[in-house]
Length: 310
Image (cartoon, rainbow, N blue to C red; front, top):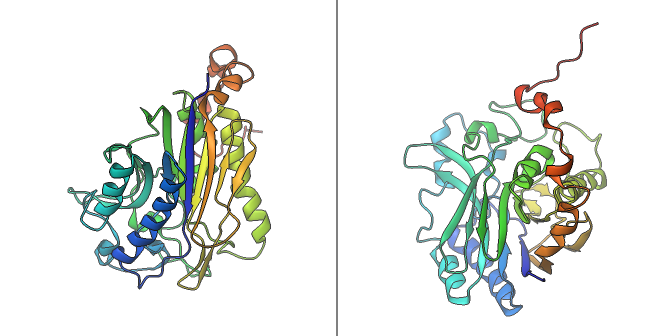
């Protein structure tokens, strides 16, 4: 049996702080149109795909950042994406800042099905950075200041011909992200990211090293949970800050089968056979046969490192 989902990764070049939603949505629409011309089933956009990466800016009053958030989804600014997706029977993943009706702020992604209906929502769990201004950093990373940790967990949705999951940016660095979805049988994990090319605390990590780390965590997540993993970057020089590219599609074997070549708006595509997940799920990563949960208690009961006593 073959279950093919043709995936398009819509890498975006930089979104400057001066760009309005309409301009950005037109760029996203252009990428979606390219995907539709190539008969893609799902388009994956980046994290915070509608705005610049605003957590790099410090505001004493948090409410001063509210204009970067969406208070409803869909809303008039992004409705053209939903309309086009429905018209052309194309699903999509979209990352954005969410301001809820109860006043909560999340770094959020949604999954929209091929009828233009939101069928899944995820809120970023692993927030990196600081909650206060850090004078030791070359630039700020204030996700903990402007977002609350996600409260929806790592759900998986049966939609568009497979078992679909989502995460966002830093989540990819935590193996628990993929394992929780793997335990639900996930076949395709979509994630968007806005990741600095260099480390804000110094030059100890080269751009090449950081790119390797970026890819290896997605490759490990794909292989160890026998699923496809799709990563979409916002890349390039955004308001003078460099974001890495490296958008890619990873197979259940852990191999990168498609990768972006530029730092700008670029579409990469691959025909993902979801049934390729079955081999590893039924052999080396047959969880029911091989997992030994009696030895894993520390993973869910302990946060920080606790070395054994002397």
